[in-house]
Length: 232
Ligand SMILES: *[C@@H]1O[C@H](CO)[C@@H](O)[C@H](O)[C@H]1NC(C)=O
Image (cartoon, rainbow, N blue to C red; front, side, top):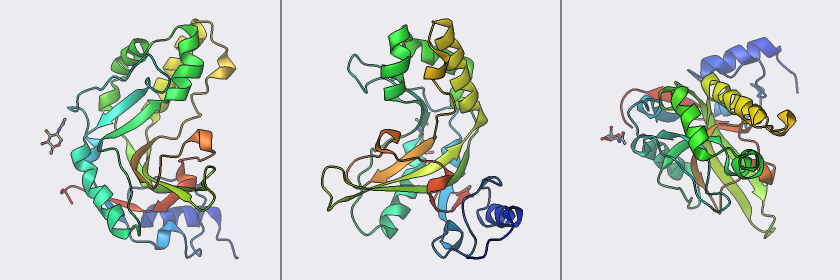
């Protein structure tokens, strides 16, 4: 396959994918018929990114996987995106009926932060200081991850999500890292950049995670998105 110069490919991609700000690091080749460049775009209401008035949701519990930090979104504006996915997807998909971007994952909280005494209240306080609910973010593409089921080889597990990006989320994770180090955490044990922000749209059996070896970055872009100001 002939490779286009990186920058022209990236330029074309940025053009074709509208507000998409995938940088020169884009993994896609324009000639590839499977490339998201050649696929119809999903429309995403821009109201989805307007979360200043959506109430903060704090998640904390005594059991593993009950504690994390999230930027809360309004599901009303995600529902039409899920409908577009259901329209093109051959089989049924499960969804959670809510919309959020996880900023600190449950395994990070349980295994890394909680052991040095950091609480969800600490994370919520840093999030409030950073204005988490007011952070503007970009929707880059619809991502898809697939995995042959480790439980049952005949099944392919699939997950779909909006891949999103905001520098402020990363800045907040660095604030959390500073707190972690202040509390005598080992600096190398919490990596603020070990972070793949996304909004879950649906999945075939169960969601897929980094722990499954699935990375929800622009590497997993599957369809372009077009932001619209009207609903649907
Ligand atoms: C979500 O958006 C809908 C439609 O704009 C609105 O009626 C509702 O109040 C919003 N809910 C929250 C929690 O912001």
